[in-house]
Image (cartoon, rainbow, N blue to C red; front, side):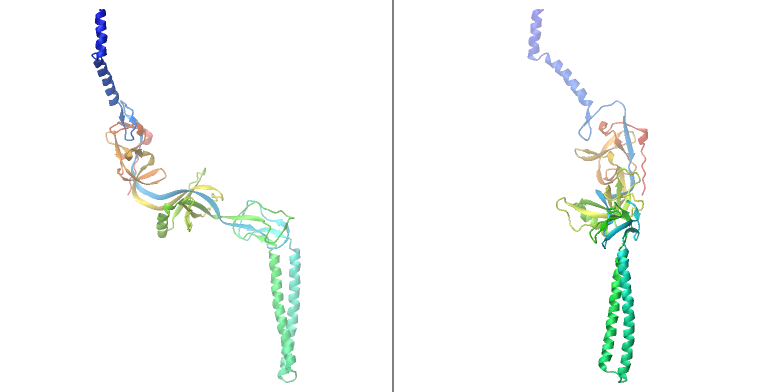
Length: 392
């Protein structure tokens, strides 16, 4: 028996007993390999004896916008910093901070007493010189009559006429002085130059303000209002092309606001590309009737160039990226899936246009793709039943 054991060991060393063991290991390896296929992404798909639950959606034919996304900043359409046009003391403030005002609304009053006195004096001088000019004109006319009758010398005729002309010029100067004094008095009332929203007032009643130096308040025009944003310079040719055909629509979405996008129009393309960033600045104008857009806000901007009519669209999450490019899993009539390469086009929101590979009405998998290979049987989750809306 001991001799037989030693012989068995020698046979094992020579490889005669290794062959059955290797065969067993090879069989196990083949079983494991057969149970582990790889999907189109190059990742192993789990083997499953039953159907794989997936979410699906139907490919639909509908219009899809060709758009350019960007981040924008809201700016007032106009900003005015009010400054006094005369020197004086603030006597009254006629608005509340943050109030919406109309063009022409009274905002500040500067002490008008000195300017009222100056106007009264100018008007008095005008009345005095007007009376003197009228008397001089009468005297000139009388003297001219005597000169024509040869009852007065030519020198007297010219003297009286020159005096009348001088007084008429003085009346014109008095009229200008009175108008200037009236204008200075009007400047005592500081009014809103445009409709907008006032900010924090920078002076209080009792403050002395200086002509064209002291800032009083800032008025921002927010209806309409502008949004400034930048896009990559590669987009400029397309933007110019489509803008030449029709005004371009711009949508602005406010973070945290569930009211939907504000809609405006592209009104400005900058005259040069920013070489430091490789972008070009654009400006869109929004009516902002509801006052949702506010100066200084950051918004998500979508510039819509055109609308692609009748495109085949599917949810963007249905598209997978594999070693050979994008592909989708299409659900066949027997509830198995087929991996199909596709050519994607423009995208909008959560949809993407398929230029080739999918037809309207076909059903694609939108969730659960990692467990699928071609031929895998699937079970459609109830909440994701296909709802293809094929419209021409």
